[in-house]
Image (cartoon, rainbow, N blue to C red; front, side, top):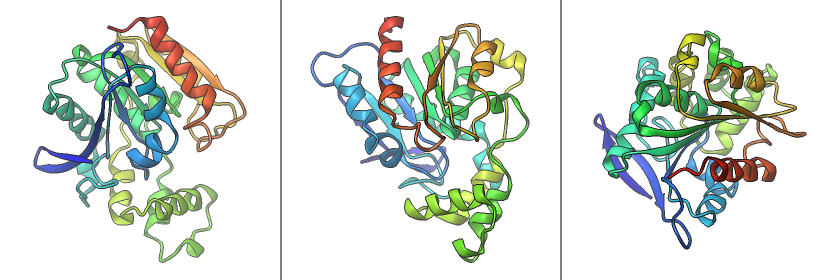
Length: 257
């Protein structure tokens, strides 16, 4: 684990070299809400899969998550701020161009990077996020109240219980996550999505009730493609073997430099 400062905030990251011959530009991985780089990308074999495919892999803990700095004001978690952390990491590592891949909240951050820093993004991969990206709301706002409840037993809402339980399993700072869920609810307009010129792969599980429609989202991008992850819900789809292989195949078809 390594650290750098992004706008004065300590951000944790890993930087893993490709196994064997390096193929293509590096890939930056951005995890989802209440997760961290280990849970989202290491334990699910993404880092192993991508390095074996010849990719240099960089992954960070988003602000408020994992071993990165914690903030408690919702405004600190505006998606633009979270995107800037990722871009600052690329700058810190002297990486001028990367494939950027995110899951769920990380996919939302990825889309904002593609919108605001087009010269940095070779291709964007959006996992676990469909047309909710185009709607003026992120995850249900009740998740913040679930995170602030005295205990899991005090949470009655199914989605709230799911995220509270996950946050406890990952050892997360519940107060920081409540601020994050309130502050990171920005969306793209259809016009902004259509203006993203890099290739975009959208991947959503067939049983995912959280992400929205991935196929609809993919159609909004100039060079969008959709991959349906069969028989997987939002949590199961993250490290699904077919999902990982689809991304490796996609990058191979693109022939990214």
